[in-house]
Amino acid sequence: MIDETHDAGLTSWVPGAAEPGGDFPIQNLPFGAFRTGMDEVSRLGVAIGDHILDLRGALENGLLEGVSGPLAEACRAPVLNALMALGPKDWRTLRLALSRLLRSGSGRQAQARACLRLRNGTAMMMPARIGDYTDFYTSIHHAVNAGRLFRPDNPLFPNFEHLPVGYHGRASSIVVSGHPCRRPWGQQRRASDACPVFEPTAKLDFELELAAFVGPGNALGQAIPIRAAEDQVFGMCLLNDWSARDIQAWEYQPLGPFLGKSFLTSISPWVVTMEALAPFRQPMVRSPEHPRVPAYLADQDLDPRGALDIEVEVALETEGMRLRNMAPAVLGRARFSQQYWSVFQMLTHHAGNGCNLRPGDLFGTGTISGPEPGEEGSLLEKTLNGTRPVELPSGETRRFLEDGDEVVMRARCARDGFVSIGFGECRGRVEPAHEEAFAG
Image: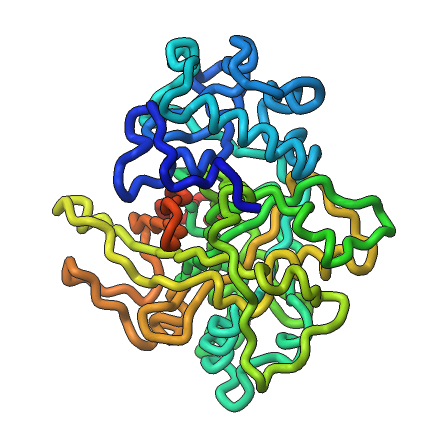
């Protein structure tokens, strides 16, 4: 799984690719879709340093060695679905060709420069057509933190330690980073109300998550065994599962989230491939007191590399902080490797009843939180459902998100002996609720 593309000694001739702490060195090479003009169809690109390599342009100039046939056609597409459908052999072929083109010493720098676009100012589009979206609930620390607020004596539901819990989300309201979050309306019932009311949420929250894109998928009625799950995950991005806690609390029983979640979900534009993440995989760790993993979700070959060591971070920038040129305040940091269930177990369980997964389907990992203070992945946890306000460096406080607040999520991988890689950012600013739609 580790090959020449992960060599820590590799550098790139592209400006910014060797910048210390940069997200996109040559060891990363994430994919996305971009547009350089308002009327132009999106193109696939690869982030490298401060630039984007135009895949279609690189192909037209004969710069991608060994890339032909269906793989070449997939690189000419406006979104990643066709590439996701091909599978690991083609993914690795393309990654190797890109690495050899962009590394220092490449003999095709002059031709390749014509295929580079500056990332700054380039319009990033949705990386794939997302046909279906499933959000999971796989952090035991988040489950305990949130559960204690409502069920202090028994925070975990009885099924949590036996299966990856998930629900079917709304694919049509998934947006790429930078899209604003309009404060949603919904039905809610406050303790002081005799009857429910329909009004804008007063408890708008974020959820710090990662997301996995499905690769080739499976036919309806066929399962995906855990030993084959690795070949089904194309890559990962950041995800903000915006949540209206007051709407959610009233509506979620008995069938789960609805209007409190479906109004918006934000993802980062760059998809970091599983090939790029290979150096940062590690064993799944469970405490001895936890139940044995069900046989269909356990594999002695996959378990030692089932976890992904990704540090995630969420920060908040208020309107007041922007006016004072203050940096966003970090609210939480946690490690994805602490999740109770892996992305491979999520996928195998999802397809276990014969549900057909398709290229470009998206899995949210659920809120990523850790066991310690400062590792909360949501305001629900950090403020104890609004009862303990967060104090910001600007002197402001927050119980939940206010209009004008911007949520900024980042993620990074680091390991001794390898070059650190990042995911870029997932941003979204809160806008006021529409008033006219329900007036009078």
